[in-house]
Amino acid sequence: MSKKPRIEFRPQQSKKLQEFSTQRYIGMGAVLGVYLGWQFRPQREPSLYLAIFISVLISLLILVLPTIRDILALAFPRLKTDTGPFLDRLKQMPINLVQYFLIMLFFEGRHLVLDWGGRGAVIAVGAIAGAIFGYWFKVRRERFGF
Image (cartoon, rainbow, N blue to C red; front, side, top):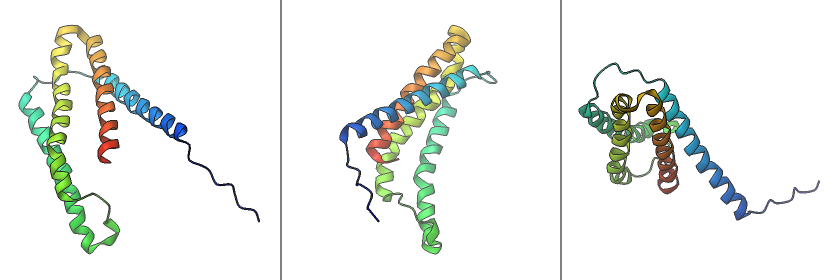
């Protein structure tokens, strides 16, 4: 029986795959932004306090849930995952807070954009914001691994 030829690593392919992956993150962010702009129907007044509260809550959950999973993994080894040290997640928390605050600020800002430019402006701003957030998530995933 003959062995299969070993596939050699080619940096050009890797670069193309990275570019495709970046385009996919940007494209998916833009599509989600268009969808969220298209489906937007204001039900209440915009609230900066709500944006702050939700972004703090999400950041705390990102910090605490992997810690709870690590504690449970002591009793149930199947739950063990590589979530990284707690201090690394704690150092990452201000970046999480800013990122999710900007996303929530976009959601609350749709009210103002709708008043200013109508549904078309909400869709356009949603596409632009979605593409920016998609790129930001891609860079963050490459740099920090999550």
